[in-house]
Image (cartoon, one colour):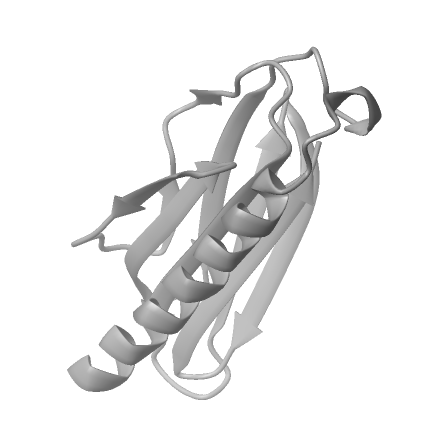
Length: 133
């Protein structure tokens, strides 16, 4: 089980890094949706009853943060302020459920509004979401 979670974590991390790299390839700030504005961003995860959140990777553009050794059914990041002109926000969370019907939902909140959700179901849960400002 530990090997499966570790493997899932590395796949999620690789996916997020790919997203960060591709978001940085947008050089023309005049055409970027969020150009010139900073945003207050909070990342959240909510698992079904009895599930245990393990690890979260979250960030804005090319600045990922890993929160490991987590536990419990809910998790929330500290509020992150994006730089003016930031392109996107990403989150990926792993959890272990009690059975095959367990669920995990991740959310990206921007300036107090829910902007994006991602879900997963099963015993070994891995959910991610990405939002372009």
